[in-house]
Image (tube, rainbow, N blue to C red):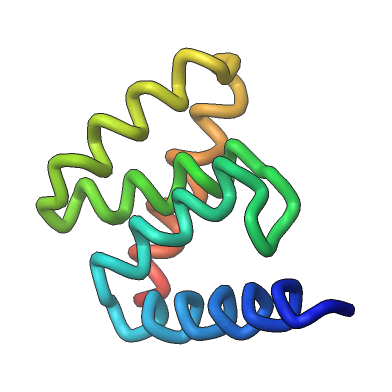
Length: 92
């Protein structure tokens, strides 16, 4: 594993830990990571979930990015992402 991969692994872990602590910027960053596949496998459902959590917390650009991402998703995947966001909120 190269240095860049190691740095991304640490960055993803940091963002996940910050998200667990309710940091809105971490929600947004995770949305970006999952939507682009940087440091994680590209996963639009996860990206939508994290953008949704950031948008719920008032981050306007997350709502914009969530909407753009949704154009490339089917209805079933959007529903799955919304369900995951609700479940995340219920646990935190």
